Length: 128
Image (cartoon, rainbow, N blue to C red; front, side):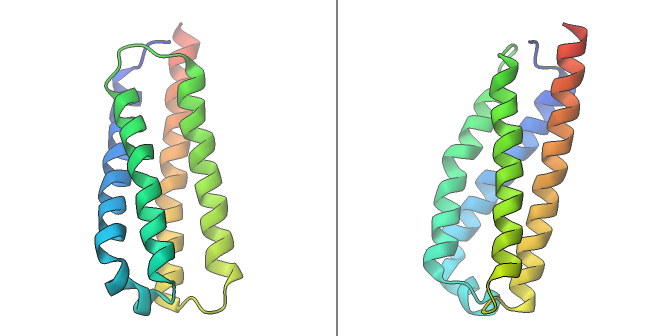
């Protein structure tokens, strides 16, 4: 499948957001822990997890062609991230309202990325 300009832009935006959020969570875990009502280890662990994910998305977004399954991996990973985020936000009473707002807003952004990537892969495979 050809990586269209639309899909390339979405993947690179997703990659940049993962890398930026990862860095913020790694370096700001101690600062954010109290206001969010989440442990610094959880925040730092999430940040560390985002780095290879972001690098993968960036690698994929810089390619001219790729198997559709590589993009589907991103879409399914984003869907899993959204589900886990919502379970975290609403399943742990120690999370503060600010923490819930943070987790749900980033989950909404990740869901938007998944929808746009789905649109991109469907368009790319339809024209192939």
